Length: 137
Image (cartoon, rainbow, N blue to C red; front, side, top):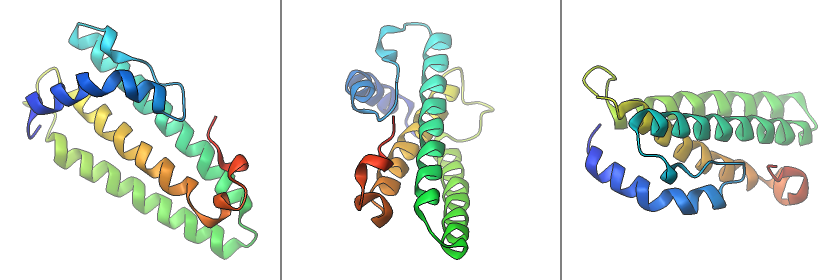
C-alpha cells in the first residue's frame, strides 16, 4: 500500500473506461460506495481477467504444434504468474495493517497485470497469424 490515496484516485478515474475496454465482462465498480462492495467488485474483475487469461493461454498452447514449445510456454506462464503475484505483493504491501482497502488494491493490481499479460499473449506470433482465434471472448 505504497500510496493508497493515489491508487484510489486513479481507480475512480479509470473504472468506467476499464470496464468497456477489457477483453472480458468487467464490472463498472464506480457505482459502488461501500468498501465491502468495492472490494467484491474489484475481486470479481480480477477473477474475470484471470479466467480470460486461462482461456487465451489454452488457445495459444493449442496452436503450438510441438511439445517443446508447449512446455516452454507453460514454463513462461508459470514464471509470469509468480512474478505477477510477487509484484502485487510488493505494490500493496502486507495485508496486516493494509486496512479495509487492501483487498481492492490487491485485486486491482492483479487485474492490471493480467490485462497486460492478455495483450502480450495476444501478440505472440501464433496469435498474430490468425488473431481471430486468439481473441478473448
